[in-house]
Image 1 (cartoon, rainbow, N blue to C red):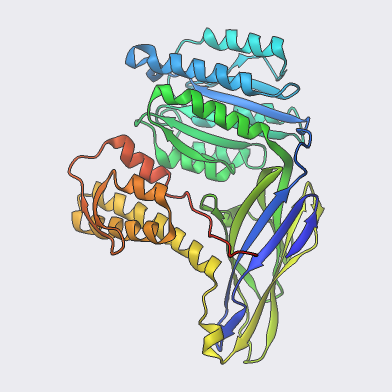
Image 2 (image 1 turned 135 degrees about the vertical axis):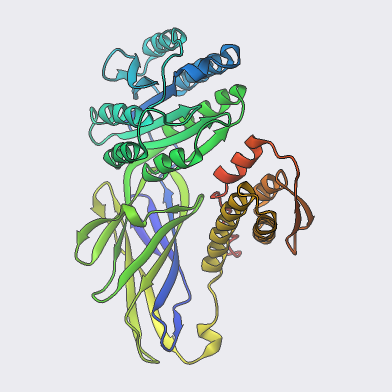
Length: 431
């Protein structure tokens, strides 16, 4: 374990013993923040609420727009005094709901002004999510170095931009702010919002009913207010001749961070981890390819460091030892095995839902049955419950299931969008 200062520590879990000829090293790195309880909220923070105000929000007799207004007002009440904030409306373009330009500083007066401003919103126009993100990036740039967060809501698909245009806008926002994206109802595109959230180190989820928005907006804003450390990166050094196969966050959700690598030098890259609360814990799976050694050789496969607000911290080490003792080399580290299973679970759900959509009932049954089995084995009870909305489970232990004839679209989307949520491995007592 490396105590990395600044209230952080990193711990490596791995089986460092490799069989002759092996060149792949797997490790799980647990990163913990433990800033003293009661520490002050970081003063320089930016909170942006970006709500869909397109014409489709007038559907259901205006219930969706009224609920969005009420949820936004509740979120505004959750913003801490002194936090810079703004409310952005989104249709075929982005526009300021409050303030008229720039950012406001949260106080009783500005919160009340913001709530009155959002109450006057009327839905119209189309959907261009990239322009909404661009507006949030502009606002975040007004406070360089701040902990910037956006809550983005849409009820529809990205109509007025091509996929390439949206991807371009997302790429330009990387590193400027974090974004939690939420889809209201069932007419939005999971892939679009997942691309937004993954690139901007946030989360994606479904809000099935308008009345669910209030609690979701409040919870997300309160969570954002709890972030105290603004910029954390996992800094990975690998020796010459070695290479990083991937870096993935594996808890609390599965996120592939490999493409977000930022080179530091020829042997070192930073993988951004975003902002952290004072008391938080996340797990990351690293896979390193190294030159093959001889039996008895020992090699340093990687140094895992944390960079906290640009300050490097002492490393935790990933090692490789080649052995001809099968009892050592075939032992699978329990943390690595657990999260490999969680990744397989997400893949099984994705493949099962795709097969079901394509009308391939046999493949869908096999894949979703395997998902039930993996979720049951790992104690992922939330995912088991989601799966039970799509399949009838005859035997969870063996993965014996039957596809349901009728499935609510919202239940299918919830299973899809939440398939990347993982459960933490239970640590043994005393360690």
